[in-house]
Structure formats: structure tokens, C-alpha cells
Length: 165
Image (cartoon, rainbow, N blue to C red; front, side, top):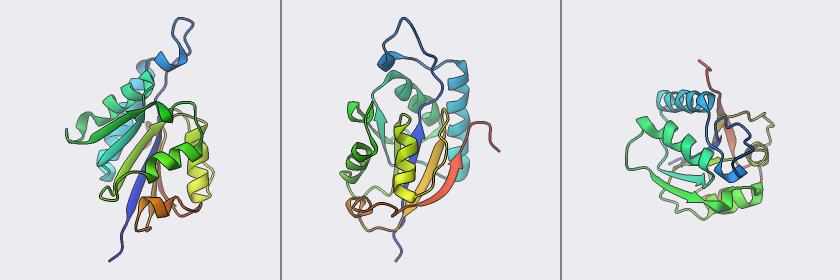
């Protein structure tokens, strides 16, 4: 039997710079809310509903998840983590590799440039990551730990961009 594990890597939606808020506290603007709704619909249409979500604890990432997930089942387990804020792709790998192998569909919601670099590290393909972009990757590794033991064990399946049909 072929085991297929899917990892969706998503960058948070649009959030304007603010003179009044710390970077961690920035909120989504109207465009960001629209982008997140669009991606949520696309994920449902593509049949991707995560079993577990690793989400940065930055306000704009949390708001992106809350907006994207409105049509998902209410029992999706979410872990909000400061380890996904202002970090690198090695930390992203470590966070996902530690998850239980009973999860076959994982979503990681984070920040650039780390999301962009993480996708390239995992599958060897460079793709620009704009606000609310998401990349669906797949591996046949039997465990998450093994999938992250060496680079390029993932295949890029699809890129989701707001407004795309």
C-alpha cells in the first residue's frame, strides 16, 4: 500500500505595516481577509482539509487560519507556536517532523521568506510566495521524521494563489 502524506505550506494573508503595532501584533486588512477566504474555498474545492495545523502565533497568521478554516470541520486540531515566527526552514522541518505519524494531512501557516525557502528545500522547486499563497506537497515517506531526514523528499502537487481559478 502506498502511503501518501501531504503538507500544505501557507504564508499568512495581507497585513499592512503599522507604526502603532509591533510586527507580531499586525492584523489582516480587507485584502488579507479576502485572500484568506479565497484560499479556504480553493482548499475545500481541491479536497484538502488538514488533520492538524501548525500556525505561527503572530496575530495575522492566527487571523488567516480563522478565515481560511471557516468551511472546514470544527475538529481540526491547531497548534499556535512562537517557534514559527521569525525563524528558518530547519525549525519548520523540526516542528513538522515531531508530529505523530497518524496525521496524513498537515498544514503549516507561517511567514516569508521562510515559507518560500521551506518549499524549495523540500521539493527543489523555487516558487514565489506572495500573501496567502500556499503550496501543497506530497511524500511517500512512511514517517514524517523520515520525510525530513533528507532534502527533496517531497513533490510539489499544486500552488494556490488568491483569486486563481
